[in-house]
Length: 379
Image (cartoon, rainbow, N blue to C red; front, side):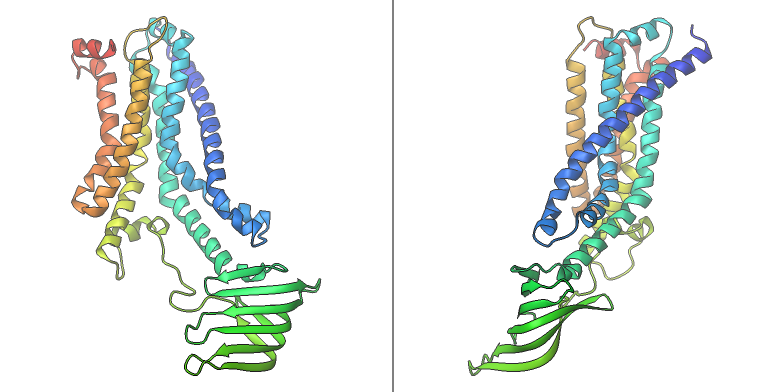
């Protein structure tokens, strides 16, 4: 039998490999997904002249949510890979021969799962809502206000869906030359404004342009006549107008847990259901780190050693995780439609881990007949 000090060193040795692999795999996947997600905002850089620094500041706010989503999957991948490699190198065989039980061998994997579970709770309850709120506010600011300051020379810049600005040239001091504004925000008075020059202003966070020596042309819908108003100076508000301007609807992912569990305000029943589903997901999803890890431990620690290995158990574990991910999406959609099915979110998160633990540790704890355990392990 191994001494407690030796067993502790083995645990640290395996846990160190698991942590390094988790950091590498999670970092690689986050970088890849972040790259694909950030492509949605390349248009702001290419067409709107947004600086690369601002682009990074905007897209980096997506990373906490990406980490929270992929952490259970990377836990499974890392545990499956590291334990499979230890088995292929005969290290697990030596550890078993030295007297280590499945529970002892599984301790490093379970420690990793508990750390990942705690990290998911921290992300889901605090970091992700804050970062996603900052992301949405930053995005809203760029699309509705800062975009007005990103006018390019010789380009028709759509500041909003019903407001387009053209600037022929821009001087070094910021003066705009040859300005054209197509303003359709007032549906009853579609105006075309021409000006010799102009200058951008920022009044209380609201972008405006001061136009000098120009004309405002509006077609009278009733008479069909073209009304032209000449001006020496005229200030145009470039912010969007109409319903919902200055405000934006919050997504449930931005709301704190207390507000999700106890909605206050005039919300539609479907919105309340979405909020409750989001709250339950935040509380239940971290446990999938443990469940997915347990699936990997069952695939690598159950059964007898085979010289050439076995593809069935790893393949079965991968297919199980794919099925669990699909069931998780289905459970969330069903719970949104019918709140009485909310417990399915918890069943999906917890039950696989319980069943895997029963299979792996049951014989040692006297909960599973050894004959049944041997029959399952022979697969």
